[in-house]
Length: 338
Image (cartoon, rainbow, N blue to C red; front, side, top):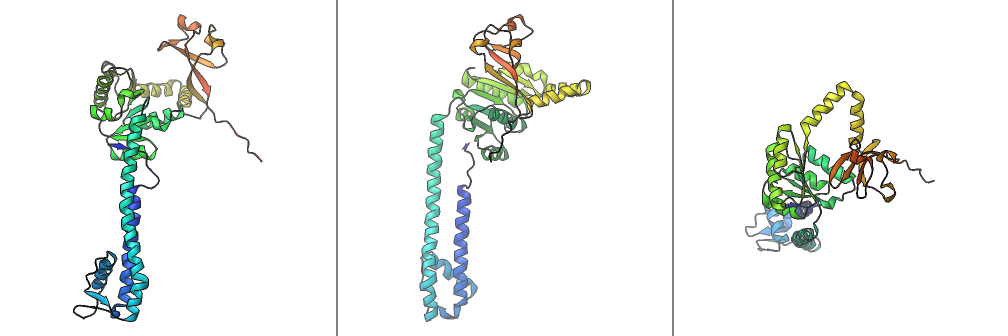
């Protein structure tokens, strides 16, 4: 099931407001009739109780009108003309408006779903919207990817609501099932990021994604244990990030070289000072050494493979190279206009 980004006020909220208005109208009519109860008579002519007033209000507003309770005094009839009859019209408007709004919302959702299915392409599928999944989404948005090109696959209802509240399209279900990934249009995707809570699930998701895409879509996965990384690569993942090993290395660095932790945290935290970035080599940079450039280049990406500056091949920039460099990511101060 596909969930679209949450709107400011959903159909259930609007329906609740209308139901509350209808109930308030019924209570208002009950109060007016109860105050004028001596001007009404029923078939037994024994006076109206509070329950009789509720009955009369509901029957009158719903235009049923059994006729077993009728106003007979001029004041009671005047109240019916000036208050009960307009309330009946308003009550019908509320009921009809609620029905029309529900039908309109269903039609709008259907059109939105059809338009999304026709246009979704080159998107990124996030399998799992836990801590890792949310961090991956944040990184994609910081790098300029539009929210409309991110699709979250998640089973948890809470995580689904968080994703739609963040303006993302979310699909309810397990990413290990081919039908769910097909609903996410995995064949048209640019990449699949696997951020599940267990390594077993990550392997199954990678196998399913590879089977559906024949290896044409890049698969990036995170695993907890390093021993599961080779299995995940064999399952079809192009890149595997070992979260536990990475955390362990950072913990070790925090003891032997504490300042390095600050540098790594700065690189990974947007807007703090430094950030890793990648760009295409410009024409005037071809033939030069990466060390000659003004920006701090730390590696080259050549024909899809990383070339470090320590390699002989990384001594000179070639046409088509991508430069991995460190950029200044501090927010620029804006001078307020007088």
